[in-house]
Image (cartoon, rainbow, N blue to C red; front, side, top):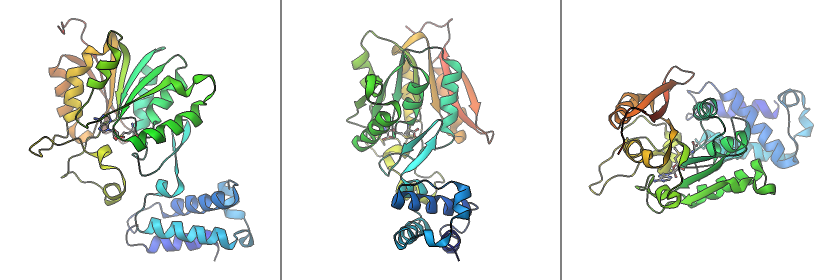
Length: 308
Ligand SMILES: C[S@@+](CC[C@H](N)C(=O)[O-])C[C@H]1O[C@@H](n2cnc3c(N)ncnc32)[C@H](O)[C@@H]1O
């Protein structure tokens, strides 16, 4: 039996992964990753299926075995391979930041479709950097000011920005990171920095889960909780809408007259979030993802309304 089939068999015996229909593709990624880690060479899918057994040295086989064991115990694939593709680039990933989700590509796509030559953007909750970096790559004049609570996530985002945008010509310097001291600060830290300046856009995929939501064990056990859950109040009460509530109230002071807000939203709370923004006087549009679930909220000022 060759290395790939052994890996598939081991994964399919894991009680943890039993329900998944992606065992084959995960095994392919594990074998490719172990091969690349050990030899420095990338194997295409075609090569993966045609490579002779003797080219899998003991070192590669033992690396495959250890990755397979960890995966079978529920460690996310991206934490084992250390990478995840997002939009147009491959990102370094580790357990310090949320693993990029394909749905977030829709958020980036909406910003790109709606904006022409934005100069200043704000992101709340940078994580691994995927949103700001893709926007900076797409809009060469743009500068992004991005906040992040986790120091380790900010370091990861900095490495991704330098590798993808390039250190030369101050490309990665177009991303300025604001370190946040407390989770309940939302847009206040931007207000201090911007003073009179106004942004063309605010984008965010904020933490939006509640403890009682249905959450996969793999996510709960391996992804940072500050990326999943908003902060609780002093009486330990949860508010899954915390970030949306505050953004709806605070954004108007930071945006130019034609400035826009782009937020990833959980489909289960889309109606509540929409009404929060409507109540604060925004004109709102909701975009669906590929599974027809409400996924992105776009808000702009109502020109007829006086925001005071
Ligand atoms: C859902 S993750 C999104 C990360 C990344 N933008 C993405 O889409 O993959 C939310 C991020 O917000 C950060 N965060 C949590 N509270 C924050 C706050 N009050 N201000 C800034 N960032 C915060 C978390 O550490 C986490 O990296």
